[in-house]
Amino acid sequence: MSRIGKKPVAIPSGVKVEVKEGVICIEGPKGKLLRQLAGRIGIEVKDSQVFVNRSGDSKVDKSMHGLFRALVNNMIKGVTDGYVKELEIIGIGFKAAIQGNILNMQLGYSHAVNFPVPEGIKVECPKPTQVVVSGIDKEIVGKVASEIRAVCPPEPYKGKGIRYVGEYVKKKVGKAQATTK
Image (spheres, rainbow, N blue to C red):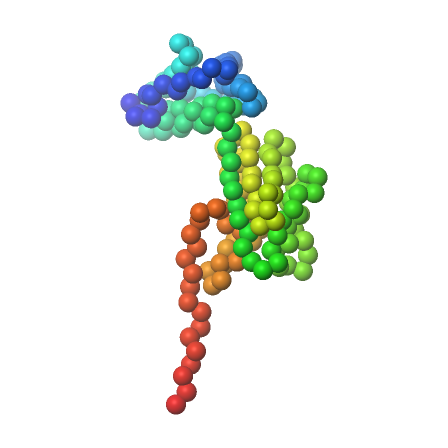
């Protein structure tokens, strides 16, 4: 038995969980999430808990068992609390601003970089050098944050670029000055 898969997921008050025709629907105070279930995974809802079951004992079934339990747990956490990823922009003249539904970034290129914000995701810039990505779907929040970071990843010599808050960038030593005799 999967150690993660066999643990039940508690349903907090204010959250509705429904399973219909191979689709799990979780609705909470922040929104509604849907996910298609794998054919060999079953989900039961009883006594304000969600139980994930598998049909066989193959390696794929065991891995899907733990995966879907984690996905259901993330969905429930998303509709109650939501997910947030914070990014910081480091570099002289590097800044970001929100203009409607577009994140406009000045990153030392000859042009401004415009990043369209997908639906269901909220992007804020509390400071010109800080970007906050939030939403209810953990997968999409992480994907959008990584796409923003990929526009200008931190470089190893000065550390300029976009990085996650708290991310450590190991810096390299530049060229050594040659000594002349």
